Image 1 (cartoon, rainbow, N blue to C red):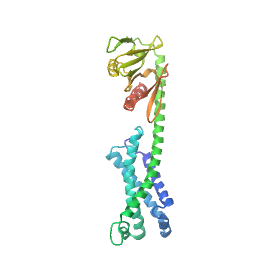
Image 2: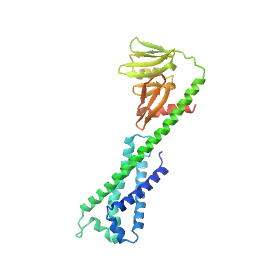
Image 3: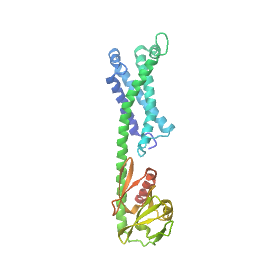
Image 4: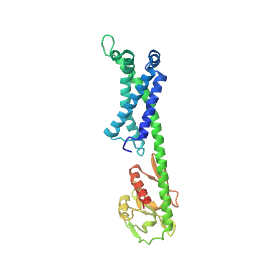
Length: 302
């Protein structure tokens, strides 16, 4: 993901052709007059499309290596927007500063360059510069909308593929556990801040939910689902359950037993897990997504 992929290069080729077609059809720089007057107009426009592509690639390299914002569809929407702005803003500026000069030089030779920014008296003409910049922004807004749309589709596609892999691993894990003899595990004591406590087999804990100063421990007792409220913090209980890696945190308010997860769903905004024998759906917060996926990966590699 950290390198510039073939998909990105293909995108920039499409964007460059798109900008070429927009300039030809929308005529922001009086291109119709340019085409009528110049015998090789389409050749020059084709060269301009190649230069657009080089602008995109330069911005991509600077964004990926300089700003350390590589293409990564696992990252949230905020990251994608920031990355696209780092790419597009330089392209818009270069396009605004370049296009008018390009057509003038092709029509009038290098002597025509000065007529773009300076009037006959040699004074700087900001009106033309501002006009060119606004045209560049106009074209850039279309590109930004299209790039955001494409990025969103790819993020969704990545999440769908990832969820399919995760659920496949969980299904295999359930099949594996069903074929294994039931392990005998000693019960442990989960103690609260007061005299309240719970004697439970860690394998029977379904999930733990933090409720301000209390914890709801949901567990199985002879195949019956029960709830025990303890006055404690999730951090303290997490330390007690450290020897049992199949119980881990997925949210600031939840611990979950991975063996009881039956389904994982969600989208680019985050994941949700469904649990055995309950309608409770637990969120996986962004800060715990990486660890959650690592736990699933360990199951798949077992």
